[in-house]
Amino acid sequence: MSHPVPDLRSYLLGTWGVRRVLLNRADGTRGTFTGTACFTPLHDDAASLRWRESGTVSWGAGP
Image (cartoon, rainbow, N blue to C red; front, side, top):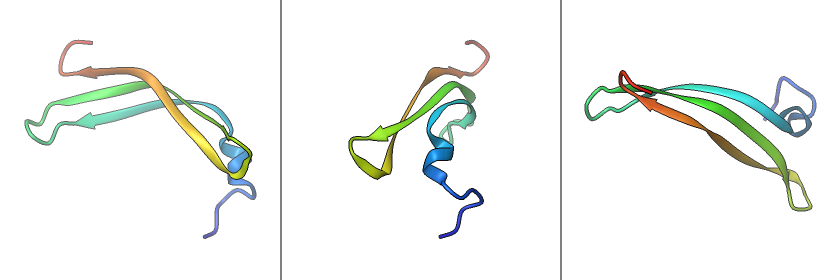
């Protein structure tokens, strides 16, 4: 598999801003997720990363 960056793992390491649009398919309600995604090394495995997200989910008209 080829990637547009030479070292994808190094490129992803660190903290990123995240904003995602959500859709509840059962009733059509829309929402958003806004927060951060943090990629950190996973133990001593040179090929793996841990991915954690934290933030706020808002549904419908209110926060």
